[in-house]
Image (tube, rainbow, N blue to C red; front, side, top):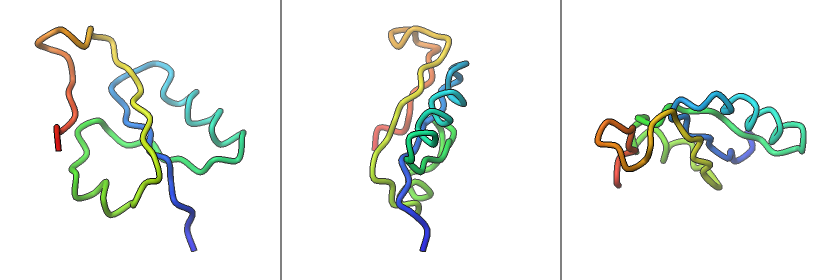
Length: 70
């Protein structure tokens, strides 16, 4: 049986891979998914938690990436 993952939502941060590697080094199963992954696909993975990995834009910028509000 596959472990329940922690999902790292990648908003374009240069640290996304580092975050995932450190999680795995500490025995935590995690998967990296794009910030625009559909809610349906995320639900199929049945994550135990989410980590939002930042991006290059300010969260206040109109051009900033935003996840589906659902």
